[in-house]
Image 1: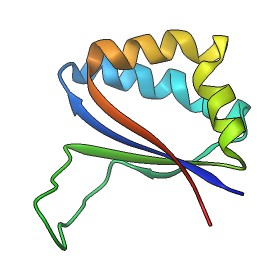
Image 2 (image 1 turned 135 degrees about the vertical axis):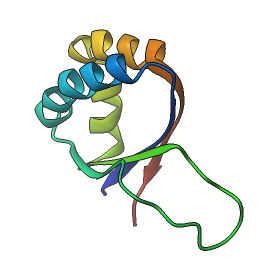
Image 3 (image 1 turned 120 degrees about the vertical axis):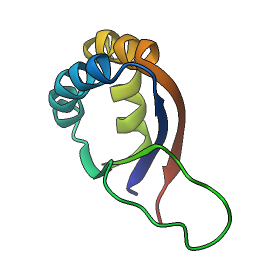
Length: 95
């Protein structure tokens, strides 16, 4: 069953976040993930949720997503992201 990582990011350091994106992309691919949404324009249809930046990644399984997030290869990019801003991240299994 597919699993999705949904990320809301408030960026404090745009330069560091750009470096993070370059470093993170190959690791996502290495663990079989792919970006579904990576920033881009958004429009509120209901409610008042207005994320500064929203990212959605897809993995074949939730276990595969957890292996990516916990991997040694992702440790350095993850630390960059955490220094570059504030993140809310959620792992959701698909249907």
